[in-house]
Image (cartoon, rainbow, N blue to C red):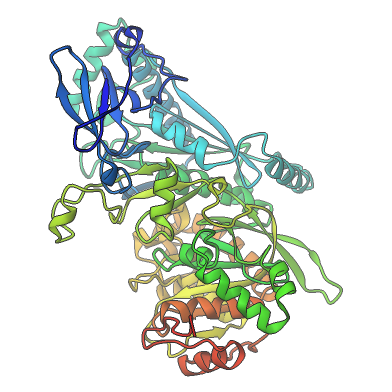
Length: 623
C-alpha cells in the first residue's frame, strides 16, 4: 500500500499488509492487538476490511497490484469529513415507546427466563457466547448481559470498573446502610436481546435454522408460537423494541433488580431504563436520591452546584461553561472576577478548584450528617466514568473530535437537511440524537469525578410566563417545580426525568404537571388508581416510589438552598453568570425573592464591571 501527497507527485510512505491477515476464515478473526494500523483500522465484517484514517483517499490499484492512497491534509484536519473511527449506528436512536411494568413476580421471572433462552438460541446460531460486563454505578454493583458487542463495549466504557477506588469506598458506605436494615445491597442486572424475530413468518425461519443445528427450540425455552412469547405485543401483533421490569414496592426488592430490553441496541435504553432506574430504586431504599442532573464546582468554598432540568434544558452546558481547558476566555473572565474580590495571587489559587465539571446527566444525592443547628449536609456521588453527551452543541466539540478517538453513537451524514451545498455528504455532528462518550481523562474540560459537598441546587427552566431571571425558592415551591418538571418544549417530565421507569409510566399515561399533583392528592386519600388512569396495582407502585422520593426531597430542599434559573428571560452569558453568582453567594437572595433582567445586569456591572449586549452576551471583554 503506497501513500502519496495531495497532488500525487511524491510518495510519502509505503506499507506491507502481512499475508496472515488476509487468511482469517469464516468470521474467526481475532484482531486484538492489531486493530490499528498506520493507515486505518482493521475491521471484520464478514470479511477483512481497512477503514482508512480521515484524510486518506483510495485512488486505485497500480499495475503491480499496489493499493494507491492519496493523503489530503485539508480534509484530514476536518472532523466532519471522512470515516468516523469508533462510531456505530443503532436500530433505535431514542428510548423505546413500549415500557412494560410487571406487577406479578412470577410473570417477571418468566420474562427473565425467556430472555436468557433467546440469548442461548442466538448463541447456537452464531457460534458465539453471551457477552457479560460487570461494573459499578455510584457504588452499586451492576451487570449487563446481551448479544450486542457494541453495548458490551459502551457499558464498560460508560461506568466504573469493579476495582475503582472511589466506588469501592461508596459501596462500603451502602453496605453499612443495608446492614442496618438486615438486607443485602441488591445488584442491578440488565439483559439485552436483539434479533428476536418480529413476526410469525420470521420466527418459523428462526426455528428451522435451530433445527438445522440439531437444537430443539422448546427445550431451549423458546415459545411454541411467537404470539405465546412473553414479549409479544398484542396491539401490533409483533415483537417491537420494548423494555420490561418488575414494578414492586421498595420493601419488596430482593437481592437483585432485573431490567430487560428487547430488540433495541440504543445505549441510552440500557443506561437510563436499565442501570439508572435500577440503581435509583436501590438508592431510594438507602434514603439516597438518584437525580437526572449535572454538577460543577462553581464556588470557592469547594462545594458543588447541581443543575436539574428537563431534557434539553441546558444541564450539560451549565456544568461545562467555565470548564474548558483550551479555550481560556471564560476562565480568564472568572479569574478576573476573583481578582476584583481579593488579589491575583488568591484568585490564581481559587482557580485551581473552581470551574470544574463534576458529573453529567445522572448523580446521587446522599445525606452526609447534620450540623450543630440541626440542618443537614448532602454529598454528590458520581455514577458514570465517561460522560454520554449530545455531540450537537457540545462545547469544544471540534477539539474533542480532532484530538481523541471518541466512541460516537448514531453519527449521520448531511444530505440536504442543513440547506448548504458545502456540507453535503459530511458528518456535521448536528444530528439531534448523535451521542459522544467523553473521557474526562482527555482534559478538554477541567473535571475530577469525585465526591463533593452539595452547596446549591439550580433548577433550569425556560418558561416565558415567568418574569424573572433567577429566584430563590422556598422548599415547597422547589418541590412543586421538581415534581412537575417542565421541559424546554413546554411538556412535563416528573422529577425532570423522561427516561426512568416511574417518570416514563407517568408520561405515558399523561399524568404530569398539575394533573400529577392532583392525582397524588387523590392517591393519598385512597384513590391510588388516579396515578395510572384507573390501574390500581400500578398506581400503588407509583405511589410507593413517589412518596419515598417526596420524603427525601423534602429533607434535601430544606437543607440546601434552591434557585430557579429562567432561560426565557436571560441571554446565554447572563444566564451562566447568575448560576455562578448564586453558587458563590447562596444566601444572596432570601427565599421567595428574585431578580429581573435589569436587576441581574445591574448587579454584575456594579460588582464586576460586566456588561452585556441586547442578546445577553458579554460585551465588556477587551475593554
